[in-house]
Length: 214
Image (cartoon, one colour):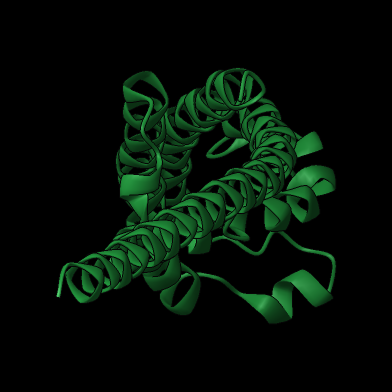
């Protein structure tokens, strides 16, 4: 009887030890998977931010060139300056929208899947959240300039631009007083957009510096 009892207790202990080992191995495997997933997410984030920074730097150069063009041409509008006719073609480069679409697929995947909890360092987590929050403000400043283009410049080009005159070597833009006001508004919006772009580049640099520590 005692032998049977010892045998039964031994069997129970073997089962308990087996379960404990299996649980420990499963937990270790899950921990390793989480570590691997976290490292992959952080690497993908770095790649996304490098792409965003590159696009923002390209935008900054483009916006700066537009501001310089407008600063040169605006004083000539609504005047009889001969140079006005020679420089009108450069105005068309300022009419093209400079856009920014953040590459936030990795961040959105982490949020939507619940995997953002894998980022267990508070400083890093706060920096990531702050960076993508900064994009919201930047995009608002971009949209402000787009509004001027769509609602004012677009309307002007439909109703007051004489393209036949342009093809014949004349000055294409009628109602120059209105045109000058629109160009001045564009310059202001470009300046706001430029500052927003600079903030975006700085935000990318700040987050990349933190990510490089992990």
